[in-house]
Image (cartoon, rainbow, N blue to C red; front, top):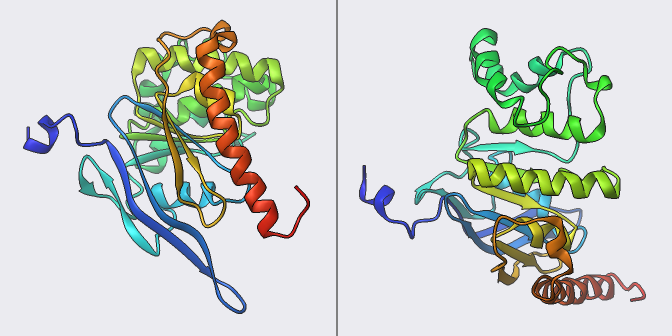
Length: 272
């Protein structure tokens, strides 16, 4: 092993001074402005911020789908800007192909990497029971509930074996009860597998429940306003959301996010 691999303080993923601007009709539109954040190996980190602040743009840059105007992405201390093979990205929609059976939807990422369908199925199959999908391998997406579709999409993401999982509002389209159930399920499987996860969410309670740390971004152009450690004990059950400790940290994040949202409205000349 190298010295980097033996040093526990080196983050699994780090953003250092990441900026992004797009060309507008009259001027550059600054979206990200000096983003600094990190996640260590086996850590669950969430990112919240006002609507339109640039969270998804930042994810596209992390995933290597876009390039920053400045700054860099590091994985285990090494440059990874523009590198797609380091990250497994689960977008907001499950994007399951309706003509492929569930087993073949979950292997799609591996097949794109050049893995044979037979080997890809062999890698995915052992995960089906833990993901609550045993017996549905040969079903089609339309035969699954919303929660099951999201679990299939997450299975497709994690089976790729990448260093970092990027989850972009994965439960946003689910009803309240199903969303709560999925949050509790994700917390349980994360305890088992200890993936390094970076999650974008608009749900403060979801961020607190799932995370070791939460970053609050400012209004656009986004920078980090607050880094909040979540010291709640694990494993976590849904009942923890009523505890005084949970409510207190939820309130800190809510106040920071509300102030940034109000600032964004003021800058657009809207009533707050």
